[in-house]
Image 1: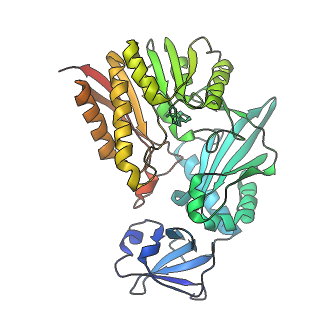
Image 2: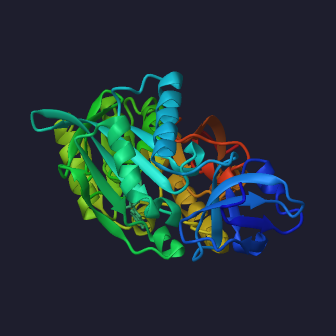
Length: 405
Ligand code: SAH
């Protein structure tokens, strides 16, 4: 088995991998024998020679090797097909997502490190179909692009595949951004169903893969508090929360985002569902907007806060915590007595404990007591894997203002 290059770790660096974590960092490696090539397969061994699995080599990245299997097996087309089928089976086993749009592959958590695939099932004009939005974010999967596209075609038989390998993290792997239609044909937007509503997912041009599937269940959870309330949806993107709240009987919804394109989608989505009289879109920087809204004296019955990841790495965490604290404090001050806040952080670096602490301290600064109604996480088609904390990234809470006590 040692015909493949072998990466030997320094003493005791195997513990994290033994617990299930898939990454080997540059500073954990004692020796790389057998001339590993960029994106190539390597075998991982502990300092004592214990076999730890198969990984793909990425010489430009601090994450020098990403383990894809605990066995000695090749990462070829049939491996990808096997993992794609497993990923699909686990999603169908746990819930009936077969006609729904879903995150079909969640990278390391599905044994395909660096590969993200969102599958959109819906319609384009009068045509029904399914399309994939794919991100290749590591050297290993980038090198295997052709095989991966063939495997995706074999398992999902989509009408088209859009590649969105334009995320900034690619630079950390020494890869240039790449995006465009990779197979078949892909319309700029596809109308998908979510929680009984129609949404135009902009798979050709939207942010990330075109639609944030990870908040599906959380949109329904937040909307269950919306009836009869005025709603403020901050960082609304294409209006996932706004529309869910409007459809649940909100008296009015104000959707705020800094992206004009996202807001055009909010209006499109409101029209698609006949809710344009309820939902209003406003372009603004959330920090400025929240400050001005507080001064204006306007108050809301439900506020949704779903910011982008303020902490992109460990070094930016403290600044990010101040940002999260500020928006949560301001949002709490905008609530009517008895109002509800649905608040999220999609940054892995902000731990659950720290997130709850941000909320508690925002409440204290606002002079309010909160009742924690629900604690939320990412949708189940973004699986969380034991030993790999990074897979547990989205945290959310729905809280109610009890009043100054
Ligand atoms: N709630 C959305 C997803 C939000 S993604 C959903 O349910 O799909 C984060 C959004 O924040 C993006 O749309 C981005 O355009 C927006 N954004 C980023 N920085 C912002 C800022 N400073 N002010 C307002 N919006 C911002």
